[in-house]
Amino acid sequence: MSERRLADLLTMWRIRAFEEKVRDLRAEGPIVGSVHLCVGQEAIPAGACDVLEPQDALFATYRGHGWALARGVPAEPLFAELMGRATGVNGGRGGSAYFTAAEYGFHGENSIVGAGAPIACGAALAGRFDGSNRAAVTVFGDGAMNQGAVHEAMNFAAAFALPVLFICENNRYSELTPIRDMVRAPRLADRAAAYGMPGHRIDGNDAEAVRFHVRDALEVAREGGGPTLLECMTERLVGHYIGDAETYRQPGELDRIGRREPIVRLREGLLADGVPASAVDAVEGAARAEMERAATSALAAPPADPATAREHLYA
Image (cartoon, rainbow, N blue to C red):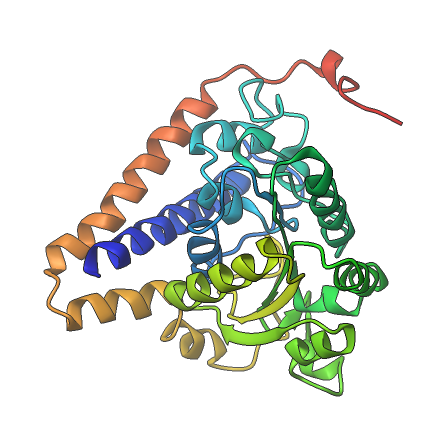
């Protein structure tokens, strides 16, 4: 059991170290443009991606670096993509907001809020005809639950019993506005009943809880039972985007949520179970060393050729 939890800790530390390095590179200049970090939300991709099959299709939001890493995308070409390098996963064309790595089952981010939901339905429907037995997972924030495309996708998936898992990362803020100020019914998972599909609110700061519910939902989906909505409760420890002044935060809020964030919780649990502190701390050290090496290698790669900007575009 400790080995599984140490593996979860490594996945989460790899994501945390990657995101913190991205933040530094954005401040220093090698990364430009809009960047959204998932610091504090690492347990959700860590638990969910652990039970995905190679053929499954994953669609993330613009806060998707952690999902890509958890799905197996190597850190170096991911850094290179964010830096606009030719060795990036998309040759430096996608940047932070639009990268994809289909060979790893990661079918990209999307800066249109909630747009991954209907695309995931298409991937799931295609799986009925190509013999892949593919399930599709679409990830979005709590604010996206109010988007029309998300409602339409849920209704379509339920009506046709498509193998789609809808994962809502409820970090309690829809960009800069608390979700409680935007809806009358605060349990977003309860909306699933209107579409005739299961909906569960779960602890998104516990990778094992996420793994359990994702595995169960995917088993139902693969057996023809249709879609499920998981509302994963979490918090982000950073702004909505790099540069966000976070003036909407309450005094002491970051300190409070920092005491229950997933890495702190898992570390404390491992120590309480008798895992040596040296073994626990070595996980962080290994993750940070890996990300430093990957970022250094990516930075040394040549910039993307602007003449290729219009390649791979279709209309």
